[in-house]
View (cartoon, rainbow, N blue to C red):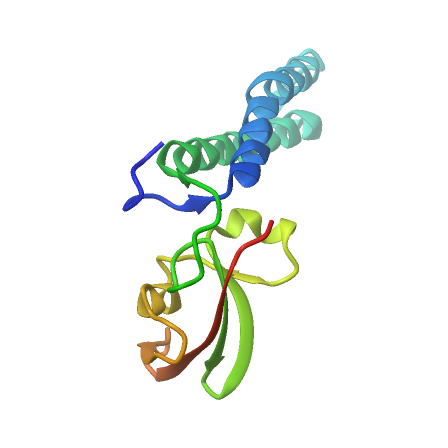
Length: 161
């Protein structure tokens, strides 16, 4: 686990869910896909074997996800949600962004399926722009198209998930 200034913030529950997913993939799922590949190989010509090609593609996607999860978990900052006195990873922000009010979690997109709000990573342009701001603070950030977007922090809450 990395120190507090590095890596993506994850709650203990999110960390455990992702660790369990990684464990499942590296044990059970790898063995299942290896069996599929072996069964397809025994069918003969691999160049025209759709089952073999599908199993190899599934294996490739899974290995990519394993690498992604391994990197995320090795570099994650795991802690209970921080206090809500300033914008930091693990806080829920209500902000006026380009004139529209929006409520979102600043943290890892890996938790997006566990919450009913948008999740913005702290290393995204918006995340970088608002880190350490307090309620009432304003700033702007450059969108991908280069346009400056104004942001005003309206509320900060500790993430309860």
